[in-house]
Structures are given as structure tokens and as C-alpha cells.
Image 1 (tube, one colour):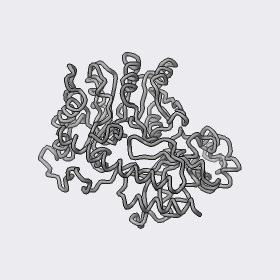
Image 2 (cartoon, rainbow, N blue to C red):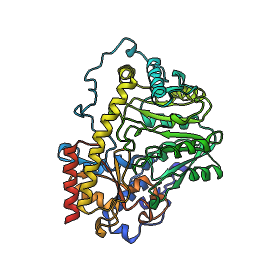
Image 3 (tube, one colour):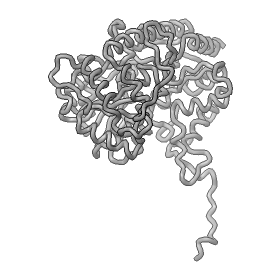
Image 4 (cartoon, rainbow, N blue to C red):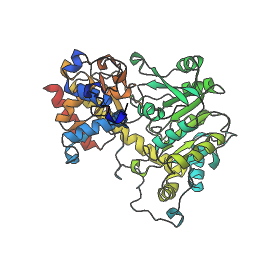
Length: 456
């Protein structure tokens, strides 16, 4: 038989990427739910393309906003979905960010994939000053790897992990699942947290995960999207449970947005509880993105045992090529410990004021606020008390677009339920993540739009 003459007919309806059941009647009645389904199935698949890779979280919500005019006139919108803080220089007590950067001759060259040594020294010094004073075991530059952003850091970590079960908790920053699924050397296993418990990670939960065979645990702390923090003594207990039993990966990007210590500048970090910086299997991820309010610089770091850091630095040669050298050089003076402490005090005062304002407005509008966020700049907003047409995340998101407001549906902080179950069955479905990262005037405008939706 000549295969070139053989014709194979494939109906577009046969090209399904989802293994879930057909949309329910509730979904069939909602245009935005069907659009979400199609994005995950791939309504026009190409042979070599997995379209689900292009439809996650903030990217998907931003694309829907583009369809409503956000790209053409962003100033007319209130983007309460983007996970970024305001970047202006007008926060009282905050140091002014560089407006220009001098590029040295070494800045024109390829940099080390582990980062330039002076910045690695500065990061180690910052952690020792803020978290390890009077402790015998101290970080050195060899315990630090500079990476081009948090996602790149997580991907590097994933690349060096051994065969393992990797546990993470939902709701959480579910780009974890997309990034980690790039690698087949471990299996990522989600573990749901309880809404009635404020989505808290108890030490007993960690012990249960290890008992069932999990040897790597990844979590954000403070936590995205719930705005809750695991602090000492519970954080120390969790680290004690993991010691010599599991590798603990702590995403600490929101550690500076801590409102539990009267805005005294204290940063949340597991670094404080580490006994030996080269023996405790704890990897910390942070950077300039959130607490230094420089998301466009793409400068982040991983702090951990030397052996881990050496491997993480090496794999940058085939994954991302390393961070931008001129921005690394410019970051060094920002990390002086006293300067950072003063910056964190200003940050916490400013963002706590915004948090209180947003919560007050939401209560006035009629939202039920069960748990006050004690960290980050997010509110995990419960929609269950709203009318049926806007009481789920996707339909509320759709209504917000019509008012030029962007939020992130809670469904994105679950583990891709489009492939597992009916969307309405997700425990995250009646939530949205609302960010109070933007400037106050943007928050006011966005909340005015939300009030119009609820009062219709």
C-alpha cells in the first residue's frame, strides 16, 4: 500500500485534549466557561502544539481583557489581577530606584550562570544579617545562585531534583504545576487545604505528606493567593519535620509583605530556623520582583546548601543562560541590610493601609470576609454570597471585564480542573484573587466598578 495515497479524515471534534467529562448544563449556559474549556482542549490544535501551555492564570485573563480593549487603552482599566506591586517612587520612606544604569565592561560579557560573585555575597550577607545573627552556621556566596526571575529559579530546581514525589498545596500559585510538569524525573502531587481552616498549612499536614512518600515539598510562604503566612513556631516545626526526611522548597517572594509584626520591617523566611546551611535541605527563592518592586528587572536568587546551589548554577547553562549582568551589578547597593530593613518598614506600612482600605470597601459593597490576609498583597475573595449569575469566579471575571476591571478567577489556583472534573465542582470556583498591588487610585476605580456589578 502506498501511504501517500491513503487519506485519513479527522473531524475537528475528534481533536480533544481534555480527558474530563462534557461540560455540564451550568457550563453550557456560560460563554466564559465554554471559552475556558476550549482554551484547555485546544479548539484549533496544531500537530506539535500543546495549547494548554498558553492558557494559564494571569496570561489567560489578560488575553480576555485584550479582547475587551485593555491592550489599546490600559490606563482606562483597573488591573487588579496582575501579581505585581506598584513600581513608582512615591511610597513614603522607600528608597528611589535607579532611573539609569551604568554598564561596565564586564556587563557586556556573558556572566556566570550562577550570578556574579559580588551580588551573591550581598545576598548571603543580607540573609545572615536579617535571619542568622549569632548563629554559628552562616551563608556564604557559595550558598547563593542568581537566576533570571522566580519561574526560572523553580525550573532550575526542578531540573536537578531526583526521582521523587513532589507535594504542593492548593490553592497556591498553580504555575507551579505547569512549570514542574516540564520534567519527568518526579511526580507533582497536589494536596488540598481546607477553606474552613483558612487554608492553613499545619505541621501535621506536612507529616502526613512525608508519611505517604513525599520527599520534596514546595510551597509559597507567605501564600499566594490566600494572603496567609506560616510563621514561627509552626514554621520551625515544619522544618524540624522535614529535616533529614524531605527537601523543602520555600517560595518567599512575598516575605516582605508581612503585617503580623506591627510593620517593623521583619521579613518572613525559613532561613531563621535552619540549623546548618549546608546540611538542611531547604531552598529559599526570593528576589527583586515583589518586595523590591522591580518585576521588570528579572533578578531573583536561590539560597540553599552548596551542593544544591552548584547543580542549580550549572543547569542554567542549558536552561536560561543566566541573569542580566548590568542589572545584577545595579542590585548590589540595594541589598545593604539596614537599607533593606528601612525599605521593608515603608513597604509594610503602605501596603497594610491599602489592604485595610480594600477590605473596608469590599465589606461596604456586601462581600463576606472570613479571613483577613496577614501578608502578600492579595485577597482571596469569596463570591458565594452574590447572586447566581456572578457567584462563581469565571462569570464574575466576565462581568468585571465589562466594567474595565481585571481579577483572576479562583479556578486557576486549582490543579487544572478542566481535565479532571466539572468546573463547578472545584473548591476554588466561587473565589477570585484580587490584588491590591496597584496604586490607590487604581484600587478606587476598580472597586467602584465591582460595586456597580454587585448593585445591579
